[in-house]
Image 1 (cartoon, rainbow, N blue to C red):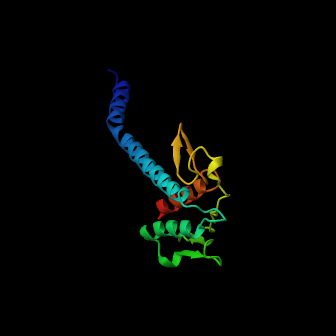
Image 2: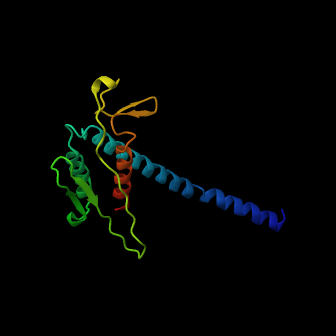
Image 3: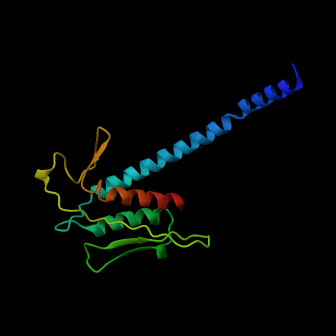
Length: 158
């Protein structure tokens, strides 16, 4: 076997032996993605099951529930605020402190939802249902889904 061919085969053999490392990294990334998806699903379920309609709902309850997740994750109390003038419609503000000199980013959403009359729904609007790859429940499209994703992202960045 010629020296160039031997060198090429040696390189291929070494590359083949080193392949488990990238596979392990890919598996770890997939596991992290599954954990993030599970957390986002858990937060979405919690938010959908809190009635935040204007007439009888309570946005403050949803804001407090989400704030507790940030407290549990170790966010400083000074970086979490549930505030507003109406006791049923308070907002959540969370700050994730950075270390770089880049400009800040603002993520904004809302927790209130439009009214949901039970007779207009084939499922309970305040229960998260997953059926045939779709989520059903008040707020799954506007905007509790986005709120769950933003909260999950901030929690993972902590």
